[in-house]
Image (tube, rainbow over all chains, first blue to last red; front, side, top):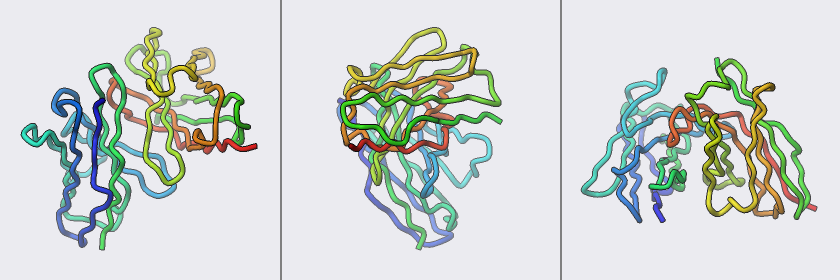
Length: 111
Length: 119
């Protein structure tokens, strides 16, 4: 089974750059698009990246998504960290049979 | 502005059936452009995909839940529904509905509704 693994938590200071990894196992992460969702406490998730690196309208360009096939991983990079970026972030993809798969989520703390 | 709103009982007894409805407003529900899906999040835990359907009738289910779930749609009311049979306390979660421009992307989410399974 295809699975996605994220670090439990990451933290960084305001204004700095932070990267969250999402490592695939049981399949190639490059075979299907990866999405990233931001979930603030008590709220529903919202899309910050879709199709590996695309930003929905309204998402600032401080959010960047990428794929590294050599490490079978995806990354979400947030530059110029702001206090409002503090949230849980989930990566998500699909396996070869249209089954949705989520990573376990990463709690981002802005120190 | 597209909005999705989940509704249904907040408390369900073990072994009974959980029934939720998602009402879509501000967008074209009958368009064959989108998939529509259900997801859930147990308290303090991560997200889990439940299942999705395409307007034409194609459906995809989480294999771990497939035997217990049914997805249906009422286009006249701009609504789609989830039924989950034989629930246990492990099914306690916030349940979300979502619009999917592609099978792989949950673009827009409802605000979620908490369903507690308890006697």
